[in-house]
Length: 265
Image 1 (cartoon, rainbow, N blue to C red):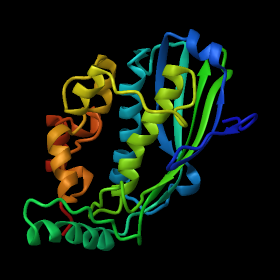
Image 2: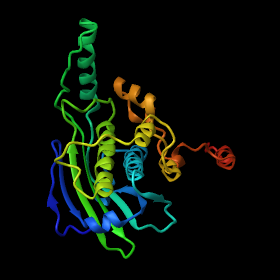
Image 3: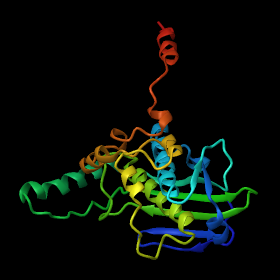
Image 4: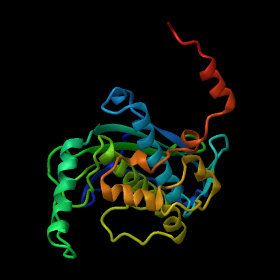
């Protein structure tokens, strides 16, 4: 990724640097998404492989749903006007114990004062964070858009999950939403009032089929079960099945292979 000519464009909660060739981006009609990866520098970080796949898939799913508002989504094997790729460059794990303390603290007032909403800030210890770099390249390989993005969970808007990947997972969707807006609108997603999401995106967020079938590759949003799981502070894997490949049932041949593996004595 090229870091030339990046300019600061921070949001209220997000630190970001951007580069944009507006005419090239707005002229594009189709986009291909290369699966998000973790930087080799943090590949041995705090998460397991399934946790990392859940985070990167959340980025890809959010990108696909957002980009569908204007672009035709191509499969990885097809050519497209733009090719998008994101890389996770830094993560900080959530302290699951402190997240549990925050969740208990938020539930207590509702038990003591039934029917009276009492907002309780999250304990500002052990909050997770996420940093991502992404770029869009044209068919000739020229970079037409780039974003360096960093955001941490906070005590007021981040819902605590008793899970080390909880904050990074939630922030992954925020990044995907921001970068897709950059490409869809041809301008920074920060510093202005957010536009309401499209009807197709709202439906997809509730677990309905995405606007474009290519987005099924990244699985469907957890929908209502995901909202309930988040409200209870459960790990994201309880409701999010991940990508289509992760959620697909094992083939019979795979099952047979496991069954035929000799057991050591």
